Amino acid sequence: MTGEILSLVMFAVACGVLILGFPVAFSLAGTGLAFALIGNLLGTFDMPLLGSLPSRYFGVMTNKLYVAIPLFIFMGVMLERARIAEKLLTTMGMLFGTMRGGLGISVVIVGMLLAASSGIVGATVVTMGLLSLPAMQKAGYDPKLSTGVICASGTLGQIIPPSIVLVLLGEFVQNSYAEAQRAIGNWAPEPISVMDLFAGAFIPGMILVGMYIGWIIIKSIIDPDSAPALVEGKRPEGLWGDVFGALLPPALLIVAVLGSILTGIATPTESAAFGAIGATILAAAYRRLDMAVLRHVVRQTVQVSAMVFVILLGASVFSLVFLGLGGNHVVERLLHNLPGGAFSAMLVVMLVMFFMGFFLDFIEIVVVVVPIVAPVLLKMDIDPVWLGIMIAINLQTSFLTPPFGFALFYLRGVAPPSIRTMDIYRGIVPFVVIQMLGLCLVAAFPWLATWLPSVLF
Picture 1 (tube, rainbow, N blue to C red):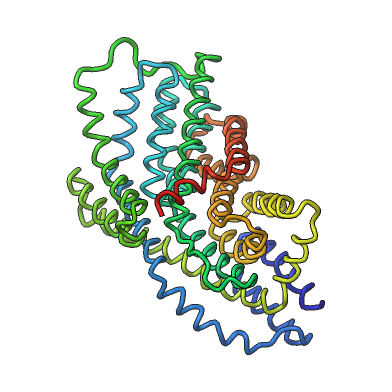
Picture 2: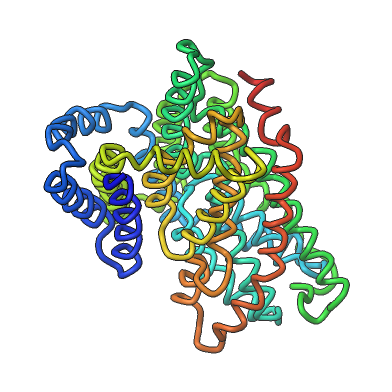
């Protein structure tokens, strides 16, 4: 019992240290080691358990799936430096420019494509804020609507594949599912992979995009002054050629990367390598590739990838100590004893993750919380793909919710002084409602997440 209490205290201390802003990897590893020593002094933790850390680290560093992370990051940063998003936004804005709300619709579409190319929320929100916010201000858009559209579109990188969130979730859900099946006596379960999550996220992601666009259209009808037309009269001549030239190359790259994954032609790692090479070729075709750009892209890729992997290694220490203290038994008893069974357990986990999303980044939540709660939930006969998609949409929603949503802070950092923080908070409310509706739809109709993987694989 002492060890189980220590495990809960350790979890609370780790969350508190992270909220205070200490480096994530060192916070997780340091908290784990400190409580390992305390547990050893109290006779509730066996220090020889830490001897399994080298094999855990070796497993992380030799996992072929994780190679996809730096490759997808390279692809996204290269496309960003090639200014493909800027060209897309300009041409799409002109295409929809004659209709009210057209520029807002363009921002959602470009945000969707940018999300599918990078999968990094912070980078997408900042890029869209720098590119589209000045254009929307110049066009006379309501600041609340423009900031809400940008924040919501930027977080699509959480759910639209290929997403770093889904890559990490796929690995942890796969391990948790195998553990849960072994616990109930099934030693040969159906394999779950990141490809299943990519396929499962596609329909919910497109539903969210459709609802975003639907709200912009409704808003432009209810309040025409909030979303005026960008241009009056006819579209410029030759516009379709410009749109075709701006949209086709990145669209072909994204379709090739996702299509090869969803059709089973290539693994996520192989597709990520193809995407990285394709993005480099596109940058060269747009005459944006030189040694300065290449150095920037490589440096950004190394920095973000190193952050992800150091967090994974720190989380290995934390999870090992948590399990060694018996924390998994506490969580299992807590969720099993809730009235309402699997529904209540799922609801509690979703609420905990939602509130943690106010203070912690998605990587921290995935590597700390998912290995603890997912095996327990999956023993309750919950579909692993559906669980992964629910977690992804839930985290995306928490990143948008005032007053602590990460996406709001990202946009605040690049927005001009004329945009008030309250404008950002008020503007995001309708999109948070849309997110909640999307989450409820996937919760009520699990086939939205499970149908496509069952057909493809």
